[in-house]
Structure formats: structure tokens, C-alpha cells
Length: 289
Image 1 (cartoon, one colour):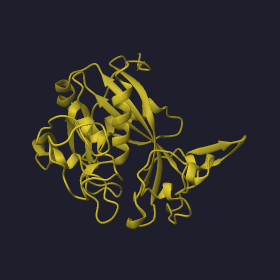
Image 2: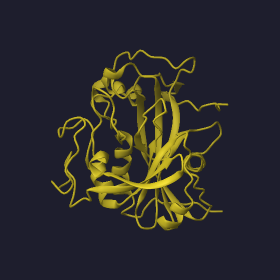
Image 3: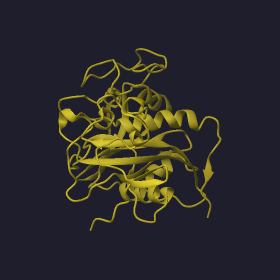
Image 4: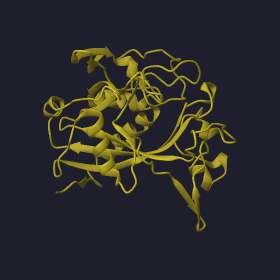
């Protein structure tokens, strides 16, 4: 049975109301031309105006949380969403999902992490920090049809005190939600964050050549990258090790046509925030007992 969902409300000049489905939440506080929330230019919420669509009697904008789990070596866990899911199938994202009524953000993130990957983090074994908020609509482009779901996602960074090998040994992904998991190294994470959706660069479906280009501008990435990255896939016989081209993770979201296996736009945003956030060491919150 589906649990009740927490909906987003906006308050301005003392008056509060539920956020409108399909409409920019940040845009409630400014005219459309001044809405500077980080989104690709093809995002329906960025375009303004009416975006018809419905949620089967569940109007409003849902609150969600996603967690970037970092092992002691600096590798971060991403999951590939199952092909059978209605929203963003085959897209790489951090573990996450809806908030339940009365649930705090960190508790919701830990619950979703456990439900999707089988990993349970004990109090005192990790620190956390807020990375940012992301407005997510699906489909992400009006060329794919009107929006069918709308979320405000809170991205949290969780830094575990355990090495990647120990965390990997406890993985037990849910086949209903996850088709693969990957621990990505820092240089690959930096390259993913630099490959911004909606910017100029290789066309839909193209895969940037690892090792070509450097710098910090849109579409560029630093240093030499491995040609492939290791992943753990779910199969009928259990978990198996595999490899995919690194270029798959560097794909940009297509503004039209069918979607591709790629890293979600919101995940790229969160990885960019994580890159600047952990380095200073400030703002981390230790999860105590």
C-alpha cells in the first residue's frame, strides 16, 4: 500500500498555499524571467505558462530526498533505475524517494537507502550535509509529453566511516527499483558534474571520448578518464560484475526523442554541489546515537 506523500507548500508575504503542479516552485517568488533555479533550458517548469497534466487525483508537488553516499576512499554510490519503472527508467541516480508524514530528511534518506540497496547505516558511522534542492519533473521535456510527476528533491551528502569494500559486501539491491549499482571514483564524478545538460556539446546519444578535453567549463572534464567503469548488475542468478563505457555516464539528456541510459540532471547538480561542499570540511553534521 502506497504511503501518504508530503506535499510542498510555498509562503509569501504571510500567505501560504500548496505549490502548483507543473509550475515552477521558485517562480512563485519572482517573475518567470528572473527565475534562476538550476534547471536545463528545456525543463517544463522553466518555460513558464500552463503545463497540462494530472496525477490521478493527487495534485501538488511532492517532497523527496536523495542521498549521495560516499565511502572513505571518496567513491560515491549511484544506482541505475529499473527498466520497469514509470519515471526515469534506466537512468543513474542516488538512492532516494518520497518523504513520509512526520519524517525528517536524514531519516527518510536512510530509509530509502536501505530499501533500495540493502545498506543500513548505524548512528555514529557517518556524517551528513545538505547539498541543495532540485525541482524535478517527468517527463523532463515538453517534447515528450505533459508532466506526470513533480518533485522538490533535497539532496543530502552522506560520508560513511566505512571503506567501500565493506559497504559493497552488504549490498542487496531491490530488483523492483534497481537494475545496477556503481561506486564511482572522484575523477569520474567530477567529469559527470561538468557535463551539464542543455549546454552545447556532443549531440543526443553521443559519448564523449575519455581523456579528451580538460578544464571546468560546460561539457569539459578533467584529466584522463578510464574507458570503462565497473558496475554490479542484478540478474536472475543474483549479482554479477560488469563494465560499461564511461561515456554512458557523460551523456547529456536529450531534449527530444527517446531517453537514454545516463546520469540524471539533478544528480549532476548534486555532484557539483558535493564537489565544492566537502572540500572545506565545514557544515558536516555527525549522526550520533
